[in-house]
Structure formats: C-alpha cells, structure tokens
Length: 414
Image (tube, rainbow, N blue to C red; front, side, top):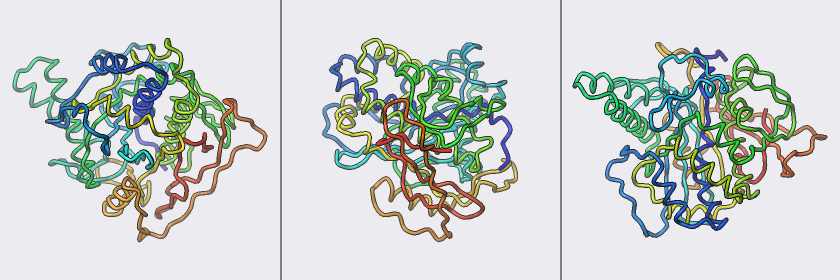
C-alpha cells in the first residue's frame, strides 16, 4: 500500500476523547464532586456545531451518540500556535497548510447500563460522497474543504481574523457531521473535537498507557516508533508514535486504526480498572490539558454524562471499524483511497451501535490472522494482555471482525 504525501503529519489520536469522558467518570468515583466538573466545563471551548443544543440539565439518562474527531492542527483549541519544541517532539514535519480530521469515531453511550459503550472508527481515507457540493473524496477532507471555502467567503466580507477563524471552523465541523450522518443515517447528538497536539501531555498526565506488540517495530524514519515486542507501558511521545505508525504495516491505515483502538483499550483498562486518577495533582494536570485541547458542542450536560458512564466497566467498552472493500482504490484527484460500500457501512454502523446482529456482507469475507503475544513476556503493568483478531482488509475482499477490541484486557497487535 502506498503512503500518501504528508502522512508523517497524520496523528490519528482519538483516544483523547475517551480520556476526557472516562476521566470524568473516574474523578467522580474518586470523590471529586460536581464543582470539579463545573470548573472543567467553564474551561472547555464550546461550539454551536449542533445548533439549538442546550443542555437538558437534570434530564433522565438517555442514549447518547457522539461524533468524536481528532483534528490535525498546529494550534490549540483557542487558536494559539503550538511551540516548536512540541511539534518537534511529535515528529510533525513542515506545515503543508492542510486541516484534516484524521480520526473519526461514532461513540454510542447507552442509557441502559447493562449495554456496552460502542465506538465505530472510520478510516480517514474512506472514499465517500461528501455533504454539500464537494463531490466524492476522502472523508477526512470534508472538514478542511468547508473551512477553506468559508475562510475565503468570510475574508471577502471583510471580517476580522479571529471571527474568520472561529466561523470557518464551525463550517468545517458542520460539514463533517453532515457527511457522517449522510453516510450512516445516524443522527449525531453530540460533538467532541480534540486538538491532536494534546495527546502526549494527556498520556503522560495519567502515567502512561499499557499496550502490547506481537513483534518489535522500527519506524524511526516516519512516525518515530521504535518499540520492542511484548507488553509495555508507553509514555506520551512513544504512545504518539505507536498510534501514528502505518508505514510497514500490512493493512496500512486500517492497521493504524487497530493500533488506535488498542491504545484506547489500554486507556480504558487503566482508567476504569487501575485508579490512575486518584491523585489530586494528576487530576489538576488533566483538567488543564483538557481545557486547552478539547472542543465540545454546547449541548453537553457533563453531570448527566458522568452519571451514565460511571456505571460502565472496562470490559463493557467495544471498538469496531466499518467494513471496507480495499485500501488501494485509485481516485481521480485524491490518490489512493479506501473503498467502501455505502449501503454496507450504513447497515453495519446502525446494527453495531444498536447492538443488533450485523447481516452477512455480500463480499466474500476473509479473516485476519489471530495475533498472539510473545509467550515469555510478562505485562509490565500487571494487567492481562490478550490476543485479538481484527478486521484488516486484504486484497479486494472485506474481512470479518470475529472479536472486537474491548477495554477488558490490553490486546496484542502488530
């Protein structure tokens, strides 16, 4: 699979949204009370991407469907440029001026505490019809295309730079929400956007995240990942390299999604099972980081969210990826893309989020090899690492996903 130009700057880091959500739950369980959350809410940047969404404070638990987005940006949530040393640590490379959403996840948080929290990932290179008049392109470009168009229009109207920046970003968010809704038929209740530059700080703030590799990797030239085989706990910089790598992986961007999900599973395992946030100093560091890098729609009711999610166990968090037909689709203008069948994606997403059996695909399935951990390497975290069978696309056939990644264990991936 060919590596697209600029891939060194694609940071694929959706785990930070799970940090945000699960952190709220763990903080409550640790006895930090509502004043902590109200202070956090006051520091987070909000968006009217879902217009009319006022929090229904005190409302009973209800099923929540959130679009979780990681944006490849060189600024924080307030628009302030990131320091050069931070960019260097992340192997960011030169800025090509693009603004893409390289992590896109639909997250379903059920009202029924007995049902799992389900996350469905969309490969960033999925070739789809974009909402509006943009035609068919990679899904991760919907946000950036709308931002570019809105910026030109707003500048022509003579608006000041900050107003142009803020309104153009809102246009980008709305375009992405509309594209995902158009593709899946799912109504998005809430929106959470993470500036990917906060990933290193968030991971370090909780003392690192456990992962497991079936074999050593050396991707120093691209992502910066140089890691041994076996279970290990990664600090922020190494975790970033772990989830960024796709060069040298058989499934390319699809294998990278598996890496992201493995990271999130380790994160859930740590936060929900390890008590990583019991230290008040850690809590304060995490709150400051979230305030700098998170954007939420204005309709979030954090009190209600915490009340629902605090009842979830790590084993009841699942990660899935939409079905794909191949990762080598040649396109007229966008290079090589991931091919999908929109009808199959819609059926898969709706069935998976609703907890229903997924109908058999019309494409002949093949199953990716089961991945197992090296037998002699004990987990450095004291947690259990388990093999995982993942949905990697090979050739032109759609693979099956016999066993989704969950937060119950630290899964081993390639």
